[in-house]
Length: 253
Image (cartoon, rainbow, N blue to C red; front, side):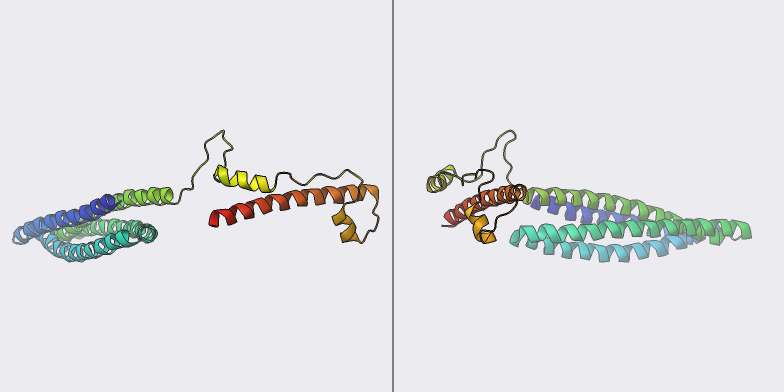
């Protein structure tokens, strides 16, 4: 499990560094294009320059957050693994949901950029078209990057779910076998103390429990048989319950 955690957070930090590298490259290209004489390329350059600065700031904050989460959950895994699985699972659910909304927002920005390009073309303002193209380009790259992050988070969440399920899995009895999980020596000792289950009463014969419960009031034969059969069933269940209680007491001792 520790290897899975290390790989996820290390991969996240590596992705942030790659994103920062691309942002620096886009910023350099933006500086170069901003000096161009053509209005379209000048607008594109300024859009790349400003967009790369925003990406660098956001990536830096995300990098710091990843480092803090990594330290927190690694320590929690070492101290309390079940609690780690529960908290990290909730954390990943929120992360996957957040990536979904971030990607939708970035695609909305792409549409805004395309709208600016079309508006600039309609008005004959090439600077506006260049700015729209730069905004759309930055937003597309961010959407691709966050889609990869969302897929990584989903895979990591699946690993956590499988680990959590295996950690709470109960021991199973082999198929086709009615073997008890209680030690045979303990079962033998209990059987020796209770060698015979309660004997069934003959139909129509009033039981002691029935007579005492009814104050020796005679019931109709059909009703009396039904009541006696019910009492037989209850006596059997009480006998089984007594065995189970004694087994638990012996096991505790």
